[in-house]
Length: 159
Image (tube, rainbow, N blue to C red; front, top):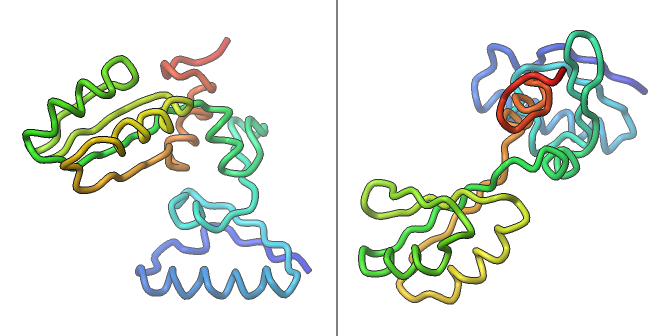
């Protein structure tokens, strides 16, 4: 069984998109292969088994989202909410491992290569007065942009 859908969530409200994803999951569990073509990448980031990116009619990347994240090596963003007293200790703990960006006086955004985020999380976890930690790997839209631009981290086209 094969189900081919083009832009299936266009015009759907959030509740309808959620119900649609549930229906697709039921079809998948029943053995149906589902091929989706969509620009609404966020709708399928959590559910797609494999993703293929096309540029000028050619496949430029194909794989699981984890494999595509690894291949693109796009940065991981770590937002740490910490009191003002803890921010200095946090900055010292991750110095040299990540870019550090203060956010709204209550949080710090750490931007690092994907191979450093575990080391950073260990250092952050050892600090006191940390309220929350949110890890955001590259989203599917970031990965798409990476391949759309030729697969170069600086955004320039490959020759």
